[in-house]
Length: 380
Length: 211
Image (cartoon, rainbow over all chains, first blue to last red; front, side):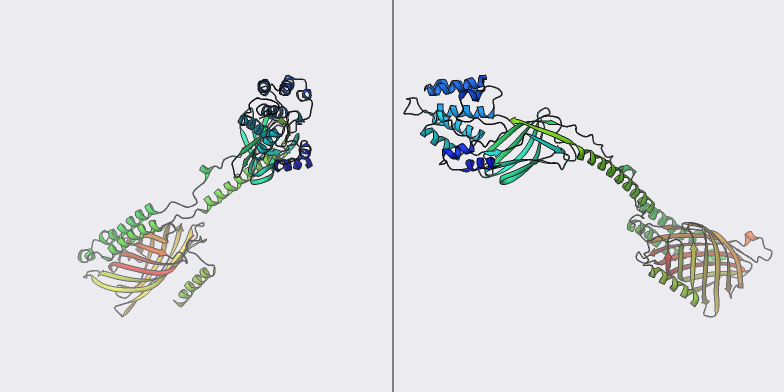
């Protein structure tokens, strides 16, 4: 952590930072893979590989003031596969030097734009890297410090290995940004091409981003190759930097049981249908009976012959009809407590079933373990 | 009469004490109602012209039926004065079989009436249908009853058959099980002393606990 903080200090220091501070910060790495020391012998950086030989040849060309040759050799080295981060840093530094020769030593024309481009690329790869002694001169130092002061970058320090358990057993990666930034941690499943955002912070210069093995619904890591990406976006300038790490996950995700859907069709109505039809029918029928009784259901005698039917029956009949219609309209549906009880029981049983399944799933998820090995930072 | 009024008040108090809501389900179907019947009566004594009169009867009706048992009781009492002179009374009891929605009724009634017969007893039997329109509080009722005098003086019973039909519509207050009803009743009877037809407008107010 001390070296990590030292790296941050270096990152935010002005171009007047002295060589001693650079040397101290040199040990701070943003990658688990060690960066190349600027003073290391040429052969050491390449470790005897073709890349190492190309880097050594580039250095020799620079020493011989053969800048065009150095540029060609460096470009050839840069397109080699499986470059380590430290190698990439060194190559783009050499390219920056090749495009910006010392006028006291050579008549070659300086290309400031190209030199700036490669030096910025070096800073973005490793903000705390210093120029190798054998390519330094005062003008290049000045240009490099200027580029570093104006280039947005971030540092991260993932561990080499993480153990993640369930939804709560989190692992953390600390990230430090040169300026307030929005920072995301996401993983990319290389086989399936799917990406998952694990954590994010906004407007922070320091973040502790968390990863989990499972989010409770689905595994966030399954066995396979991943690329962990830390995306850092300057909150003000929107400049961004993305740190990428190869990772391999080991773990067998649990097979979760899917809770049954609620049987909505089994729900019975908890209120009876509104009595509009029965109100109209009953009102019309009984109202008609009132009138019919008064008119027709009489003894065939002197009374029916001499006395007209009672007109009040018609009044009652009409009111009965209107009452039936009004009753149907006013009815909200009679509560059906048996259905309500059956529905409540159905809901309770379903909730119990779902709860049991969820508990079982929760236990499976809680026991899910993932081992995540960081394989190194992906070269940019 | 006072006892009956007291019983109605007691039932109302009981319902009130239970914070009764008309739409709650009660274990029984209990109805107690005070009625006022405006009767137009036509009587044809044997060998005479018909005589018309208007009568206003006041009385009470009460019924109780258990939905689960299917049995119940009904009682009715009404009284009034005809022409300000003779008093007329009706006392009736029935046994109910069925449900609150549909029930068969068998009963016995005694009527005292000055103009036709000092005391007339007859048997009654029929049915009542009640349609409660959901939660509206409105109910529609139809009743059809056949009647037969107990004393027929040797006349075949089918010559003395009479009948009674009644319709009414009622509204029960949603917050408390009190109700008001308006109905029409027609009674046509033949008895040894002559023919009779009564047409009544019946209004009532009471307590109705519904299952």
